[in-house]
Amino acid sequence: MLKGKHIILGITGGIAAYKSVQLLRLLVKSGAEVQVVITPAGKEFITPVTLSALSGKPVISEFFTANTGQWNSHVDIGLWADLMVIAPATASTIAKMATGVADNMLVTTYLSAKAPVFVAPAMDLDMMAHPTTTRNLQQLRADGVHVIESATGELASHLVGKGRMAEPQEIHDAIAAFFASRDDSALAGRRMLVTAGPTYEKIDPVRFIGNYSTGKMGYAIADEAARRGMKVTVVSGPVSVVPQEPGVEVIRVESAREMLAECRRLFPEQDVAVMCAAVADYAPAETADRKIKREHDDVPVIRLVKNPDIAAALGAEKKPGQRLIGFALETDNALANAREKLSRKNLDMIILNSLADPGAGFGTDTNKVTVIRADGAAEELPLMPKRDVAAAILDRLSL
Image (cartoon, rainbow, N blue to C red; front, side, top):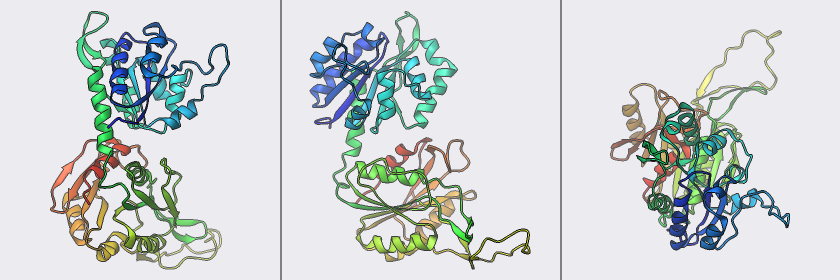
């Protein structure tokens, strides 16, 4: 699974840096092309000569190469990589990553990386248990970083506790498993339609009925599908997020009726459609052609009409072999209501969103969902970054 993959191996200043040599050997032996980026403190524990000999590439540590003044572009390295792994990741580096302190080449490269990032923490048990480290690791998880948990055992201080870096083979296997889960030949080349964000239903030229959706979940699904080789089109309401993967087409709309028209136009050619947008249920029956003025007009009475149900409309038009996935945000009788929508809208899967759990819902970088299949079976997933939620949904998609 690693053959031909471009991997950045970040090494920081901890005694566990000696294990990074073995990790590097395992990655190279598996066919990966590895670029080592090491902090100045890391070079106190393992020499660049050793790392360069094993990787076949010059080791990068500083922004400029000594003597020649050659600029090492953290942007180019970040774009080159298919994955970045930092092992060991010290408390200092984790703190800098969590707060964006880009004072060395490694953290700057992390901030430029578009690829998934893994960290393998390594430190003494008191540092690992400190609230600051706990908080910083939580922030990294919320930012989408994959944390390979430290092991419990004897540490460099000769104390026994949690803080040992995971073994090189374990880190290697976690990376291989990550790529394996995304090397899905069943999805490569297939077409996916994703709806994302809110819809705005105009009251007058400056006011609208809408909701708090930011589009983050829908765009995470689109990016994950593109990473797996799918041809993805997003029909997007008004949002500020953009795709992170090249090749994702975005069609921007404003109202529910505009979104329905685009979805109906595109759906016949799609293999999968994921209805992730938070479509407004109602729209004003009439839209004023001028701003309604508080000073001169009576208090307006806004008559509402139902918006079209886009998922149900596509469900009625679905052809054999097509897959249709819906989303449901419920506050009462959540499972029962989601299962009812699954059946009524002719969906193949419905994703039940949580509003009750901290870190889930609108505007967050994490989400907590329950996946409900066509037979009604429900699988509750833990709170995790929306990127990982997207991966979990696609893992459960069969074509």
